[in-house]
Image (tube, rainbow, N blue to C red; front, top):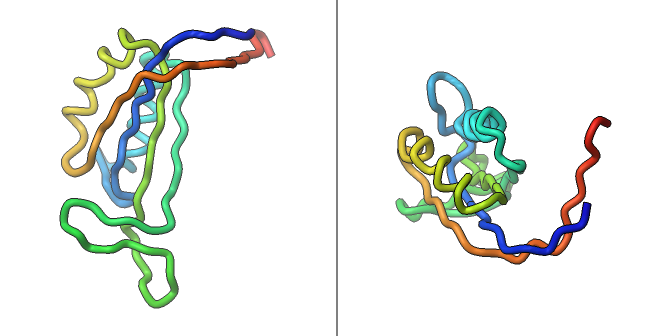
Length: 113
């Protein structure tokens, strides 16, 4: 299916070791997005970064860190993103959430496969 329309990209920045209810926070966020029938979610693990505390987290051998940055991206309608935001307010203790309008040029899904 090919669609060209405006949607919203939600970006959620958290730490790899952040948890909620005993599971990885990024996993809980993706599972909740699926439960709420959002269009999809992807998780990306960073190789280096720093946050509000200005402490650098890196995969470099001399700087082994279990707190690498994690980025979760979700693209969906503004309405669906707005329904999802209260959950993020509840579960994110430290992190950042951004959203921006984007122009989706192509979206394909294989129903029934």
